[in-house]
Length: 349
Image (cartoon, rainbow, N blue to C red):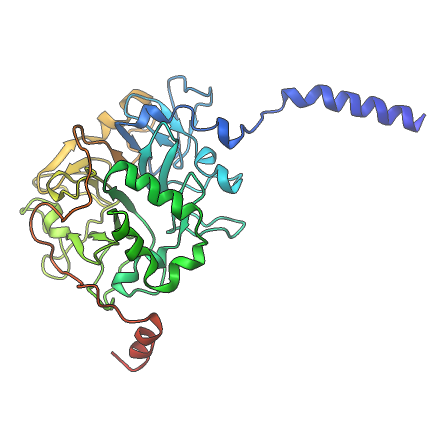
């Protein structure tokens, strides 16, 4: 009798398995990614959508990739499928590289519970992991400052190739102080990014979380006071306030003049903006927050903007020199070994 009961139990279990919500395999995931080819973003807050979503789940997390027309382009678990992460880790930065190849570069708000990566590392849906410290090689920063905004420049096919190589590279190899800048130069690709934390004692230039930085060149691409209109008191230490650069986007050509971004804090004077609005460099609000989230019909009026991706039409990329005003500070490629920097800090720099 015990054996019969066991057989009956197993048969019932097999019947119930198809009713369980299955996690699609990585090869089947990201089916709706093309909906964010032109524009994608994440919110700072989780919310319930007032309209049907593509997968039938009305709960939208702060780790999902969304489009302004009310579509969920990718769930957080889909982005994290290479690491089989089963919890939502947020979406702090994003750049949709190639929708057809389902290739997205991004960062999370929370560390991987299994320890494969930390918040602040640059990740890609092909399994690539580039540690945060490697992004800061040229700036001689030895700690994780987070990754708030992310944008690749270069020819799209070269970016894809670089990320394929990155997927085959052990994350620890990026920490040798030379590999990442050298490979970015080889493929004529750059990574523009912003951080969550600041480091005033960086060996190259002080880093603030409202600046947009270049991994390849070790320069400030756009400082906080260049991002916002002149009437906004943006920029430390001279003007008083660092509004942050929470999400950044632009063209594949390294063109400062077309950069879009969002901030971490609002400004009520002229020109007013919130940390959920889409801003254009030096011009203020280009799209209000309410227009970005309206198609989802959320019950909340304000959700904030965290990660940001925008495709600039008629842009063929190109990894040449930066287009626009001269950068604030240039690191000519001369950087000290990390151990030497540590010795300098210990000597009371």
